[in-house]
Image 1 (cartoon, each protein chain N blue to C red):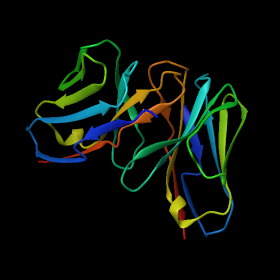
Image 2: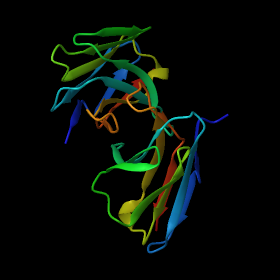
Image 3: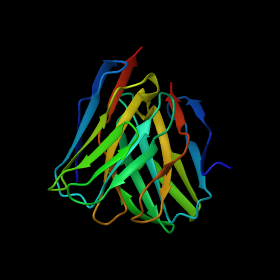
Image 4: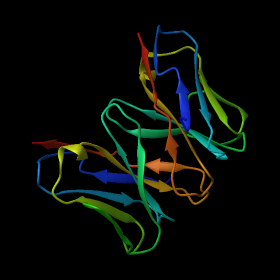
Length: 111
Length: 112
């Protein structure tokens, strides 16, 4: 079945530093989604990328979808303590019924 | 109004017991899911239902039995609970093929 790999598993940064998490799929994805889960919370949708090579920005967050639609990245510029949490990428199966999550990257930001 | 609601939020029970977790969504979505999140934060899909019909069953032990009485509800019944079942269980919903999935608050199950 479709597998979505995500690295790194953990990242600890000083406030103000940048952060990037990478996602790779074993198969071509129709689209990729990104979610954020705060400690003790539930996953919350951030964005969806659909087109090959697509780049989207949300304030300090930049999301990219690879040309081959097999990889994606999330980059946070100048991290803040409010960015703390686990960031997941998720690929939807071709049938559309399954949303398979990567293992997530847990971000810790130290003031 | 909570879009996806799960009950209970916490569940502590002994090995061998049977328990249920309920999930309801008021978003009008046709697809609902159960995910298991272990201590390492890995979100693993367990089941997916579309219009009350089981679509995906990801190698989950048959002690786990989902039931969808209607499109807005997807309950999870677990028989003969084991220590390894301890985890946070998330219910989620979406429209088939749409953008985002909405998650419930999660049910933290602890088997002792």
